[in-house]
Length: 286
Image (tube, rainbow, N blue to C red; front, top):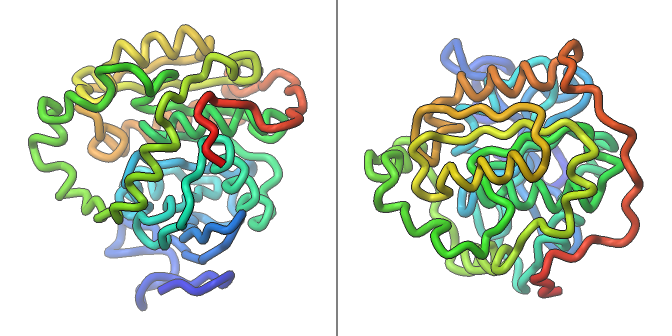
């Protein structure tokens, strides 16, 4: 269970294990910019720089748990978008830039001034927006199964050919039902979004790009283009479909932990510029 502003642990299991191999997260509810979010945190207070994970369209913390609980030696946290998982609907549309501001308001409430950020699919676009918008606060960036241009005609339409979707991986991962309003507003937030104006702020830090060899939702060619565009320090292709961060969770976790390790050369960031006003993303709704 979870309550406003107070962290609680799931059920009555021991505080650090679930059936011997799962790390139990802590949950709390926080509000920012008129929206209320369920926050889920693993390894609270551990390690150095916390890692913020931003999930895909209609996916909540429970869907991401197979990956996030395997990333150790640091705090890892995520939040359910409005209308998804444990977060209630918000009743007005939001843009990518306004959601990025809300997420960083939540980070402030958690006491996280410096962050590493990871994003998957829809969340990968939001991760790019947030990183460019708050350039002085993000040390390293991990982009998974995502693109720099959600306006591309073939993004998303190949889901019926994606092996993760066709094989029933979505039901296995217990992907939540998203409210119609939540799904609509998440979709609208990225309508026409692109990273054209964000690149100068993105390339100031080390970036890891992970993509799937048989991704039909965000074809791997888009990840190839993205890796070149953002001058990725490392680009790893993993065998699998669109949901590879969860179906190949251990492999992805290992890549992320290696990239974020203090002794990894690629993790020495360039000195970031401070961002001033929120950067436009071409689809301002609020």
